[in-house]
Length: 211
Image (tube, rainbow, N blue to C red):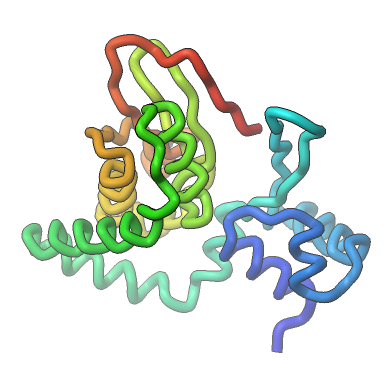
């Protein structure tokens, strides 16, 4: 049976980000008790804190899992998944079909949340929807286009052996945006983040930044 610390860590890993108040409500304990556990998890290198700025009102803080936490929660099936993906990688047509099917399933789950015709608004909607999947957490506009970013790799151990999870995520983003998406950085390749770009001729005027 999980103790309170383990339940908090599992919820943070599953949600990819969580606020103290959300965890307290979910677990039926005080916010102060949640903060104590999160402070200990942070000291152990299992969670980090992120400041989220809002258009109006004060910024708020949310906790996100580190790679170490994700790996600790996933260790029971990582080896099996790695072997499966290695086998799929040897059968390119099967691997391609699997990546496409997973991407379509993710996109189908979130299509109802993405309705904006304006490109900037649509990027914001897709980022918010896929944040809950652990696929994206922020976006920004640069001279070469719109960059979509995930600061934590949810498949790090697996992605070292197969590009299938990365390709599936890229395709899901592409399906929801309705335009070509290119992956330009991966954490497993030494990048600081996993990053995608939608190329544009001129940079859009708005930028979102999450710290």
